[in-house]
Image 1 (cartoon, helix red, strand yellow):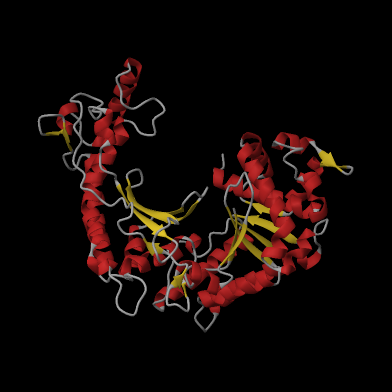
Image 2: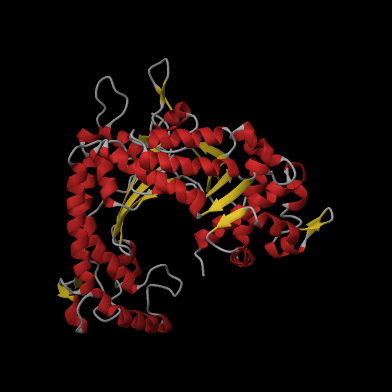
Length: 492
């Protein structure tokens, strides 16, 4: 079975192709959630002497994906939310893409599929379009690194496009672009690749589209098209009175959730070793660091937040930026090395200090899981060797018994974790191991800097401090808006 991401994005490509065939003037008669509230209803319906089954079959010829149409249809039959989102986004794109992005996309709004070199195809996970773009990205990324310029940890930080519209004409140009990337005597960088992408978007030949599941109204947002507007949102624009309009600003002490040293929780002395009471569990220190962000120089409002944490499941460093009240997060980093490199751009040496501590912590965490190091818990008489209690080595080895004993406690009504709880005694213990080994190492480093005068003071003649600048660098990276990022369109 294909993964949800592949299926949902391919479903969107299919409905964009259906909308293309129907045209702007007739779209309300076909892509109507009132008339067809589910995919079952849609597939069985029709309009103007043509069945929707026929429309699906026609549109599928214009979709190239790494999943089959049968798989996509089975997915839509099960997931009403993605059917709704696919309809809403396709309808909005066909009605207003040419108004919001570029007038050359107006050809898509006409009834029927385009022909010849202008025939628009919809790609998801293919080799010809997305695969070729990815190969060009690899060359540019490597060359940028060699030249000491911006490098991206992965393709999505350059462009998070989930599907592409591309006509036949641009496909040949992409092949030539890859030849230039591989064979050019002049270094091929993101300047070359981004100019190519921008030019093809401007001519209505290519469109990178990033999708956000949306069951209500849909907004089309061009990203990296207007540099001045982007800079105003991120860095702010100076007004005549010397104040800054817009920008991203650190809220400092206003509601921050910074690191607090994690101490082992007092636990029951028998398996599954739950915290003794719900209150003890609820009062445990948070295992993350949260930075609140404002959208104005007064630092009064809350535009969003950056959450930084060690992910105990994957043993990785995860950083999420999310907007206040938004349905979808703004973006993320799952690389401690990338995070450290970005931090070093603002405070030289701090990123490396964090990275060394993080690597030491994850190595210890692995040993606590595998039995290479004793894991001690507090059962009321000081710290006790956890392995001694059950006669096994390593936290992982205890998982089966802990979860079995937890089910017994649920039946007895004595567990503080309900059957529908997002966590359980095993994941709670694993989280404690992660907090002690990793967060207790990196927390003081990040916390100390965020609270320091050095990081928060604003030098004479400047408007922002070091934390403000770090937030902006981090925001550009996680939302694919750095200087070397490509143009793309978000439908959300």
